[in-house]
Length: 147
Image 1 (cartoon, helix red, strand yellow):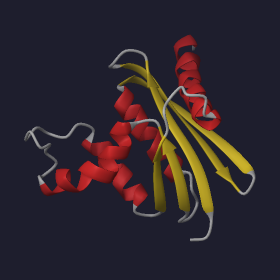
Image 2 (tube, one colour):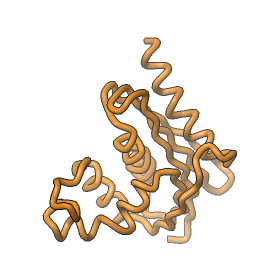
Image 3 (cartoon, one colour):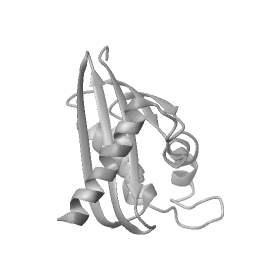
């Protein structure tokens, strides 16, 4: 796995729940690709998870991925909480069902195919590709609300 992809992901939601969007910026060997999508009734956390899932699904083979997210929910969920949730039968430490289990399971399957370095970046702090991912997510919402 010598190929290294840089990926920025972001999700957005108008209301919680409400209309949501997600955006992804992929960079590889001087090239870049953007992805975006929309959901009519969702939550911000679902859009954050969906962005990472869709970004990883877009990779055509196993890669080294330098992944940047401004979602502590996604990053901590995958790097700190997931193993415990699974061993507790998808229950939180408070014995409540884990929210978004369907997406966590999809994300786990996608992550297993790659070597990922997770990085948290502060949202709306001027990091160009994070700002672009946010813009893509919000544009997806705007375009669907105007349709």
